[in-house]
Length: 315
Length: 289
Image (cartoon, rainbow over the protein chains, first blue to last red):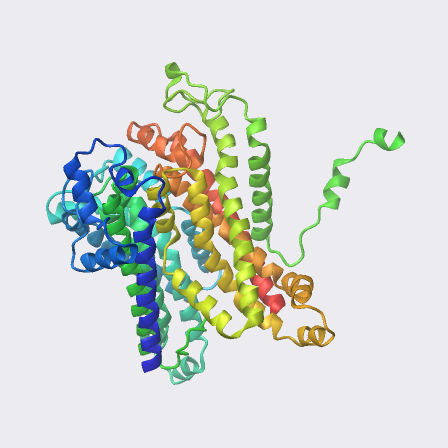
């Protein structure tokens, strides 16, 4: 276990280090000199050019620049946005609440819908199972931006139940604004949980210990709760962890579709608006979240299930 | 000349089309749809009845008529013709991504599985950690540097999908290479390249093919998403992702046809590719076991 833990953490650190280096070095892969790339054709005063040279330590050797940048980043100093003339960290903090709320709402929906329908499909063979499986296939094949537009068309424009755009003001209003985006993400992600829930519950249901419980005359409800669900919870929680990481990356497109002020839409607007420091900072943040989640999931998996093979060659 | 004059009975043609053994009804529907989309991508622009970029503002959001079955978009362009043209641009990118990622992933995986030792461990480590980097994020970062466009996003997504392909091929190749016939061929003095190209690759091909078809589905989602965000294919090109972005304006004004038709095309295409990919993969695994 100790070696496994160390190995996973080393891989995580290496991933973040590698990804951060790529994100950092990408500035120098761009055609032209860094300052004209950063200002992207905007009129630039000598002061701005000097500020950018200082922010990116352009007068220092290359590796030194990287170390400076990554040290600054871990101290929360991501420099200043070129388009908005504000510290990047301020922008990130301004956009963080929407993304966090959206991810939490989506996770709750995905887990409830996925486990519920996965469970029903596991125990009700025949047409109900087939129907749920078909729904999962279609749902999984519906990209979140397509379902976003369909949802806007029906529930915001047609029925007028939900606002079309924007993040909302107070907390109740915010949740109201985030219902459709969360549903759009849920449509794309619930089959991932649902398929695992169905497969693992069905597998547990056919195991000998369940057979024994049944022969002892325990009620079906008791068997499902105490014997099937508890064991099936291990693979289900692993997949929940993995979907969390994917969800964080997937929010970008839904936030853009609903014009929300989240981290993902901040990344997209900074890319289309050629605001490189912001794009760099958000990309670094997302990659770190992704890598850390993967490690936490692996460790949780190993902690929950002592049988797990603690080597990287697992499937 | 007699052969040419003999009419071919439709029933005779139908009889030559036989069901594929071991494939269920859903799988057959998926095969037919995949063939249909392939034909659309190849010939769609040729059979499109109208110019997809012919603007006529007086027909903005015009309803359907006999010549324009789905109606007009905001700029008065024929939606049906734009859908047909869009099939090509929506599948061309994913096809290149799959070809590139399959070739690169297969080469890396087989070299690793054959050489074993530190080469395999290093490759597996790199591939494992690059799985943590979401493909969409990589593509967005590439666009941040070189600017929006289909070429940069296709290159980025090819790199992003390589580890997924390599991971699946690697485990299949390890099983295949450990089989007795490979050892026997080695003893007979065949070179590593010959054994891999003549025996190992053909035997793991069903698994590669299944994964490749699945990758078409995912890459189609990604490319359409990037085009929707304005980072991939650029307007005024007819593309399903761009049509969704344009159609969103129509949705807000109560004209959802453009967005709905492009969205349905995407959903049906992704559905059929993933259903078919899953079935090929399952069969490949059954053969390998």
